[in-house]
Length: 549
Image (cartoon, rainbow, N blue to C red):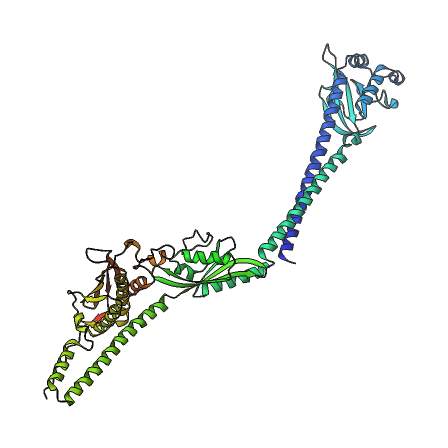
């Protein structure tokens, strides 16, 4: 049996049980009310008859008498008066007796003058009684009231009034009919509600049984918690239904589960992608820059047959991949610079060899001396960097900057005692800052330049990059603008665009260092960025002593 059917049957069983209990309670209450009403009516009639002056006078006349003439009583006023009261009120009987319990009036004339068949002693002592008893006329609800002498107050007789059960319970079928009708309406309402609940339950669970739900929950937990990618499930009502720990990490600790996708603090680009999919698009791919993290988002429509389940967004953290790409780009730039040096070196060696072959020794010596003094690239000496890797790397950057009309300068306070021990990280951080500064300088006014300052202290490299651009407009969020400018950014904004600065800061922090904005803009220059990279340098090896020939 299906789970929804079992729930339906349990609800119907509970409804029937409640209706039966209520029906029994109402029936018992109705019977009790009718019985109490009959007893109260009998007592009222008995009191009325007992207080009648004629009844008192006749009872006084027969008080204390032990022998009575039945024929005289049958033709007397008490018999007639009792019969009239019984006919008028619908009572089974109205019996009048003297103070010895002998009947003075009775519906059956044969019983006149005889003693009452039910207990009457308490009444002759002045008490009123109400009970159900069996007498000469059968079972009845009866009330007995003493008849007293108005002058002395002594009990001179009694009046007994009774109602037959058929008279008492005559309204029970009608009452039970009404109660049964109400019960049937209640049962019908319960059945209708139970069917609606069953239908709703089937719709909500999509026909999945409890054991299947347990398996689905286990599978869901295994999938959401076991995958490396972030998963975000959004219902058709825009409410986030699920968010696994990987997605929470991508969002910087934000868990939007249970919130509207537009009010959960999620990236606007992600929200727009979800809205596009919910509006009808089958798939939307985006790239998110979240402070110092980069993620690719794949949002797709989720359906179960004809049912619309909303959208599912898969977030793949690509920060480490892009970081590796930046390092490879730095190595490529350094390799390119070395290739240029090797090419220039080969050209000069060929030129020197040709001069020597032609006997132009003086010119060959001057070329070789110049080469030894200024290096392989003619303009490299102007950079004045006494560290092989940084000299080659900055020379390559200088060539790139020159192509864009920007002069790359080395600050006068540059001083390097050691050599670079971690060229990939240094090239990634320095390369991002220099590229960012070149872009800012290109966007600024002439003269366009970028200045680099390099200092080392033990194994720590400190570097500063200054440009001639317009500076930073939002210094408090320059490292967050990569995300903020997804939505609204000036067209000419440079610093903070893309992923360069966030990734450079991530490289620095990974080494235990830092990257920060020193100055947004200043007199005669634009933005100034600085970075500190522990462990990036190592001591320079002592030069080997020349061996005499």
